[in-house]
Length: 81
Picture (tube, rainbow, N blue to C red):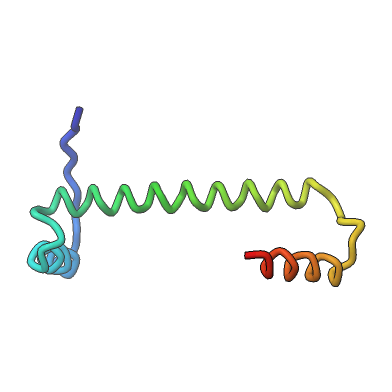
């Protein structure tokens, strides 16, 4: 299902959209705007996933290992690949 929306853009933005269509990346204004929305949705999803990882990290508490031990382990794992 699709819904028709009306948006207002500046003349500069109109020219930008026309340039993107002219460059062959899009066939019309709607396709360009939908792509921008999809990219924004993907960006927000990635940010939310990263925030969840950060939150999990903070919730896990302080590691009993030293920074040197963590680095040594990471270097060891990197050397295995």
